[in-house]
Length: 275
Image 1 (cartoon, rainbow, N blue to C red):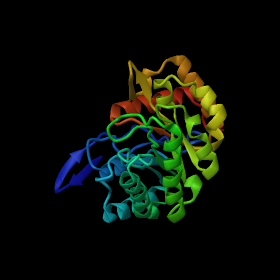
Image 2 (image 1 turned 120 degrees about the horizontal axis):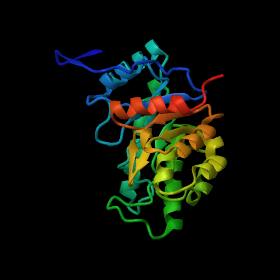
Image 3 (image 1 turned 45 degrees about the horizontal axis):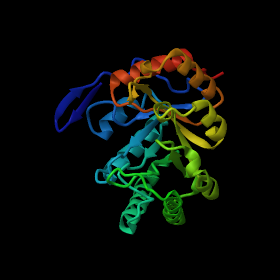
Image 4 (image 1 turned 60 degrees about the vertical axis):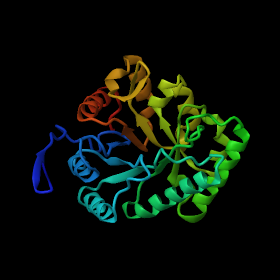
């Protein structure tokens, strides 16, 4: 497909087939598969997938209102849905109130900005670390600060189940009480669970009913967000059995065309198809 940018035509290879409606769940990937901006990526991917994960990792680099309008038009044209990955440079449990307030305000701003797109979920990282990378020593106080930030976010702009808390490097039961108290959703990142040696089976039993989205990517030698080729046969079979009755969104969270295509092929090989 040819994409015209600043009067220059750039040719990208499209996916070789559509995966829309193939699985019991919505199949998605990130908005950065091609080495380009968000709109060319969405235009290339929209005909082939059910949903796109809008990756807004940096709070200082958000889509413009014109881009949001264009994304809404693509959604209508293709019957596409979106989910939003909120920035990872916000720290809702930080000791510094200014840092917490900035993070909560940024989440509110993004939710308002993307409201036209009617995202299926907004995925958030509740980091146990501060901006310097150090782990908070007092977990109880960290949880209290997280609760206040989440309360502020929910008070203004969104309903609880629209927020999904992603599994990171710490056990999710550290914040299970917060998740249940606010009745927010979960994002099960299977790649993170494998990377940090948590049981995806145990997590699925405990949290899949609350999950709106699953992030799926390969892990090898301490690196994640690789093609599913990096996973072994037993891991793929386990994932397939878990997803057999899942009807939310499964986002292949990779960032290259090769990793996406090989992952889709493997998922089709191992995973259940819509009956």
